[in-house]
Image 1 (tube, rainbow, N blue to C red):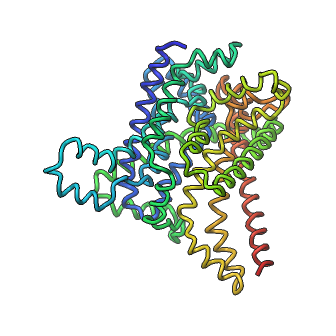
Image 2: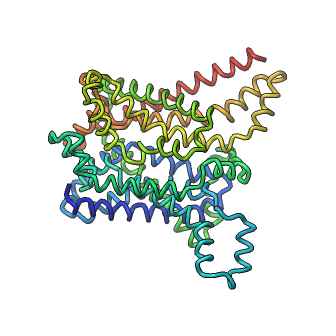
Length: 487
């Protein structure tokens, strides 16, 4: 690997992490602090992070090719897209991570600020806010530095793309990993910093549970759009609010709306024939199969972690988060090397290597999302709803569905999309005869945008959504029926 490419990747990752962190903090201070229902801010940004990178890269294909002759502008476009994708996680982490200093300590420090030493004051600043920004910055840096899929689609000179190219040229996985030891060493150091800057997770979530009220969800009868416009015009005099609103709209537009509109426009331009003349249903079925098994396995492992309270141990947090932190590409190459050992070689061309990789990728997302939603699930509210069962099972079942099961369905959907649209692991580990839809997309998208391919991308995106709508409806009917029978 060229050290020029490594330095370039390092600089752009630092740039992306810094601006995503600053933008997330700015949104928290000037938008989240003024919105009663934080869902209007966080859910759109959160969804942007889960938009498949392969679809985003394909949406920017034409613009990216035009900018290839201007390398700086080309890389700047990639940086802006990555910032837009990471602002959401940065804003959510900064909002929910508590300060390590209590309000009483802050008051005492303010009183004694003129008398305390400089070192003590700096320590106070770090404990009050510095550790939160350190954690968020390192987390966003790891996400940007280990990113591969979008960089590959946009032909960006990134160390992970060089690693994949070396593997594609026939270099063994172990040799390719040895050559890239410098990025791995840097990632390992950043992971250690990440753990050292993080208070025990159970303290953080206990703090949130006891100090922050649960959000009410999208319950405003006026509708989301009307609420947003009323909120905007009521704050129209604030310059910072204007800037924060502009950042919010730009993040949504750059990281999701623009590429999706480009894909949809290209697909519609081809007419109904482009949608009906599809040739990848077998690949879509393979992707659905792998994603379903990986999501269910990650969900069962998450239930085991919660049952045994394993999340309170930092070593468990490290082991669970490590696959996602080092990046899906190095993880896929390590799994490939593992199944090339004589003892496991018989399973090399089976679905097991890809399935294992997807489970390791899905587990951190599943566990963290479950922890966040459990924070806002009040035991008193669940108990009160359950007391209604003998008197009104229909009302009680509706309340229990909204409080306990809707969030689980959303978590399953988000994790399912992560595994369904992952093409890095599928490209490296998919067995012969089980090509996934993203692997086919990756091979065809390099030839440029086409109406037929855009239509197939739209269908491939809509199928998981439709399946989960059907799944949610059936699950709701089954749960209501079950509660009515246990009345």
